[in-house]
Image (cartoon, rainbow, N blue to C red):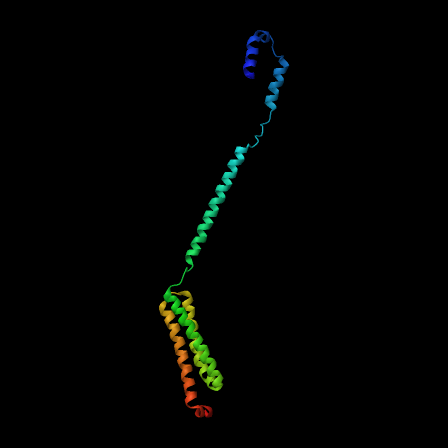
Length: 177
């Protein structure tokens, strides 16, 4: 509406303005100002800030997804659940370990001297056991290694049981030895 009134005014009074000319010194000042003018610095509008924020969010999301995928790969390397067979094998190992410790303590209590006679053999078996256990750590799903660990415990228990049986059957002879 205002524009229309201005256009009307200019159209009606055009002849009054046509005879006027701008002074020459005014045009030279304008030209000099154009030559000396420094490039103007554009201020960022909110649109540019929005684009920059979107780019930052996109970049952050990409980094997060890459990190999350790396974490998921590491989680895949961990055993999630052990099988029923592995549970049974672990229970058997724990059972034989407890039996061995119990028999060892009993022999030590009944006849400490005879325990000292058997102790080097037990230590040798223990060294073999530790070697098997080390192998188990590298290959925990190897059923043969677990069976050998169980066999090792069974052998140590048999040695201790024989010693205890001998002591109980021949207590007088054992004391004199």
